Amino acid sequence: MEARVIVTLKGGIFDPQGEAIAGALGDLGFYDVQSIRQGKVFDIVLEKGEHEKVQEQLEAMCEKLLANAVVENYQINLLS
Amino acid sequence: MEARVIVTLKGGIFDPQGEAIAGALGDLGFYDVQSIRQGKVFDIVLEKGEHEKVQEQLEAMCEKLLANAVVENYQINLLS
Image (cartoon, rainbow over all chains, first blue to last red; front, side, top):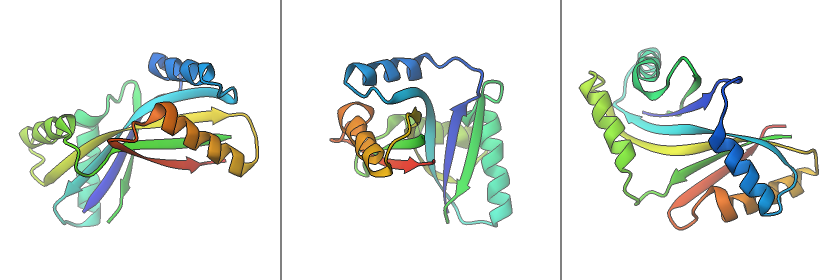
């Protein structure tokens, strides 16, 4: 089974990397960019299992390692 | 308008960070993980414009700054 987990900073958290990228895009002439926030993607291949159990397992992975729940949100998309 | 750009390493490119995370998940007891590859997400807010033009502009941003086309692929999702 394959899953894509997307980890992004929560709304109020300052994202200096995103701001730097937005600034660089402005310097390159992309004046329409208002803001950018950068996050992480994890493309995970897992052994086959029940949909619900795999979903639970992915949530546990996010809570324990992939995301910092204090400052980050995560989305889990089971692809197959 | 809002867009989400996802940048991932191309298939054959070694991903030591992904391997380290897969190893750490194994150490935490997640034995069902076969592999992980890590990528980047950019959540971009842009000024309103024609769908096609914004799409073109996002492609140009990927080619020039957000992705390294030699070793990375990118997906552009216009959300609104």
